[in-house]
Length: 78
Image: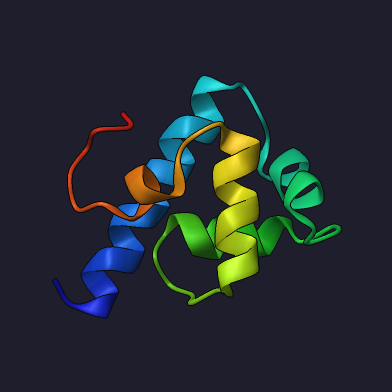
C-alpha cells in the first residue's frame, strides 16, 4: 500500500471514530495536543497531511482504538 492510500485510510478511520464519539474536530484537536488545530484534524481526516508518531499514538488513545487497528489496511476498527 502506498503512503497516500495509507494516509487516506487512517483519515477515514479517524473521521468515522470521531463522529461515533460525537466529538467535534476542535475537541479532538485539543485532546490530541494540536491546541486549536481544528484545521489539522481536517487535513488528517482528508488524508492530506503526514503526522508524527506521537500524534498517531495520541489519536488512537483518544479515539479508543489500538494503534495496530488504526494502521491496518482493513476496516476492523469500524
